[in-house]
Image 1 (cartoon, rainbow, N blue to C red):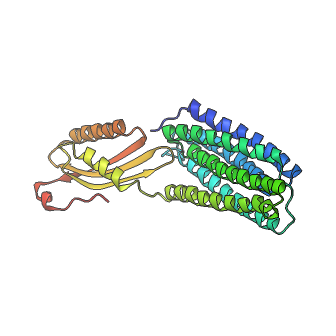
Image 2: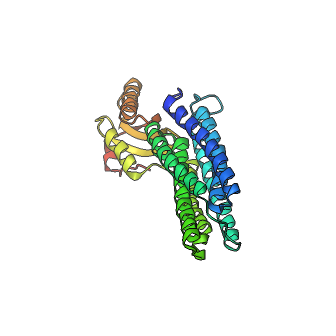
Length: 307
């Protein structure tokens, strides 16, 4: 039913993400602790959550590629969606933590900004931006929900690092020009990061929840399926047309009417050709379930149903 081979580019991308997150977590926490940078330290703990998310994505990608079995006849594609939902939860928790740390830092005496902390934030921003483009490109090519969620997680880190660069940079300017108010740039930047990360968490979580709740594909995509079905002259009416995402592949469910005087063999041949046509035109379609109803000339007056 579905592609059960592991995509080497996808696995490489998630391993690169995992190793990068481990390295950046260690770097940010050490530098943030030594130089008392709330935004860098909070971003480091955010990266620690990313390590868990990357590991979950790696595990879910392997599970999602397993072939259907007796207990999971539709495959294991939703394993990646569960991983995506986990990423959303981790981002939401990270946003709350970053906001709490930033608020507490605002009411404390700000620490002197560090050039090394600024360099760390710049390196993180550049590296995470590259990882975002890299993982998103492969995630979309492979239609991997887990990898796309990981890419969005990298994007959240870009926001966090950018805010850290601005906040720490303002602190450095405040120290150099003796402007005390600029020293609060670091914790204020942390609050901005929290808002951006939380918004991203909501976006990822909603998308994952929609798939887990069997939300239908877009109306445009359903219409495209309908147009393809109507290219078969034997199909007199579409009685029902449904489709839903099941992780990295789509399941299509069709009820259609063909002339009642056709034989069972003819009906079988029509549905086989239709199933192959849909799969050929839509590589991400993993299964097409087709139920055939008899059609009589008098049925031509009945309205077509596609729901």
